Image 1 (cartoon, helix red, strand yellow):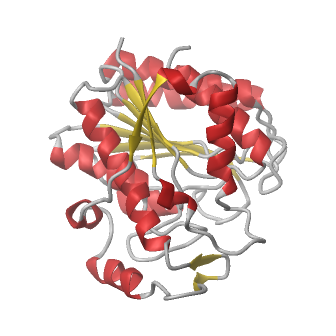
Image 2 (cartoon, rainbow, N blue to C red):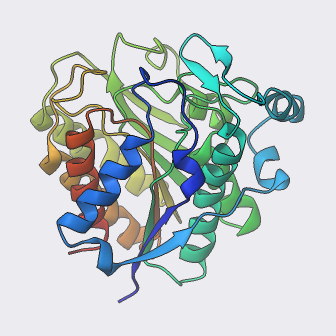
Image 3 (cartoon, rainbow, N blue to C red):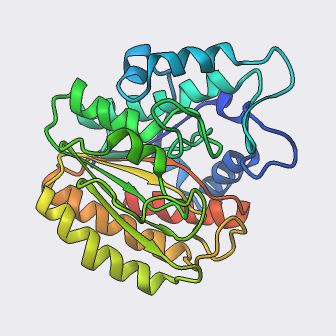
Length: 308
């Protein structure tokens, strides 16, 4: 059986936005330590993420925006791009490695070197729009990966799945009305970024859920809403925006998921991948800010991907 790939890069821990900020380098350390502690890490194939190419970025982002980001990197300290999102001297390199992880993982899964992959990267990506950083995000890692799968590998249909507690408004901005993509998601609503509930594009399956929603309701959404649409679409690859801040212990959301729910969602998505996509799943870290809950949830997700 082919292994599950694990993609990260040391630079992803060098981006930081201040000691107070919840999107912190310790998130990756918590994941790394937990995967070792529960015995999963030795079963994964570990890869250092390359930097994404200019061509890869251009599939999802405007050229003027990319140049503005590159020119905004400070020599020291921080450069704010919105009230809760800042660049430090290592942010641009970390963002390139994060996007590059998803591109490289997609390449290796498509070449049948790996069964599937998880990218433990930061900064996250799903709030990054075509021409704007937002919500801790600079480059939209999963949108870049989805377009790479379509255009570099000649696929006709790619599914994007987002189970972060926040709506992936940036991914929707980039992929809306691209008939080659079906995006399915649930998210807490009304909640930051206060989008996704009104008039989504035809290729978006958005399921707004109220604060306090627990795993039984989410599982029902997956089974009764996501699965029929995904099976009808017959995706040739699945890319996951894997946010774990809908966990009941995470203070940045007010939903009630637990680790077993993330394992369930992962297994259901793997069912679709096995039926239509030759098992091809590429997952990339988004949110998740309680370090213990994040590490345990990623452990459940990766364990399901690796079928351990």
